[in-house]
Length: 178
Image 1 (cartoon, rainbow, N blue to C red):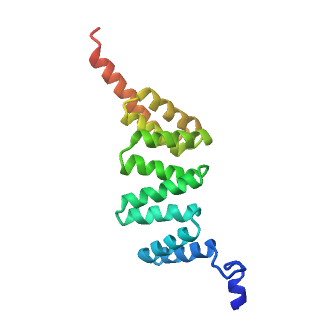
Image 2 (cartoon, rainbow, N blue to C red):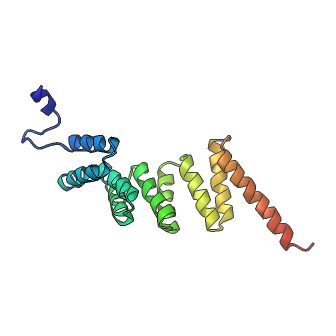
Image 3 (tube, rainbow, N blue to C red):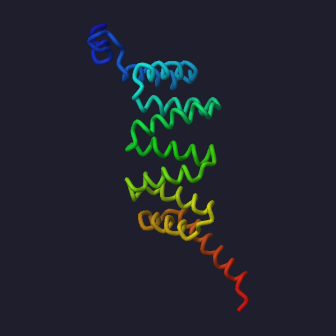
C-alpha cells in the first residue's frame, strides 16, 4: 500500500509532486481550513512557481481574507502564466472591474478574451455593461445584440437593450423641440 500511494505522487527523487501538493491543498479548502490551505499553496508555488492553478486559488483565498494586494498579485501571475486560460483572464478582469474599479484595464482583458472566443456570452454581457457605465451606448447595444444573436432567450441582454432603447427615446424626446 505504501508503494502504491507513492506512485504518481512522489517523483523518483522522493519529492512530492505539484499535483499531490495541490490535491492536499484542495482537501484543506474543502475542510474550510483556509489558513492551512494558503500555507500549502504558498509552499506549492515556492516549489513550483509556474503552477497557475495554485496562484489562482491563492488569489481567491487572499481575497476572501480581505487581502486585495496579494489577491491581485496571484490573479496576475495565474493570468500571465496561462494567457490562453479564459477563466484566469476573466477572474483578473473581474477583479480589476469590480474590486479595483479599473474599468479600462478590465475592458482590455475582456476584449482579448472575446477575440479568442467571440461567442462567449458572459464576456459579451460584461463588455456591454462596461460600455453602459462608460456611456458608450451604441457599443453596449452592439454587445447586447451579439448576445441575442447567440442566445435569443437571454433576458439580461434583452432587458438591458430595451432600457437603452427606451433611454434613447426619452433622451431624444427631451432634447428635440420639433
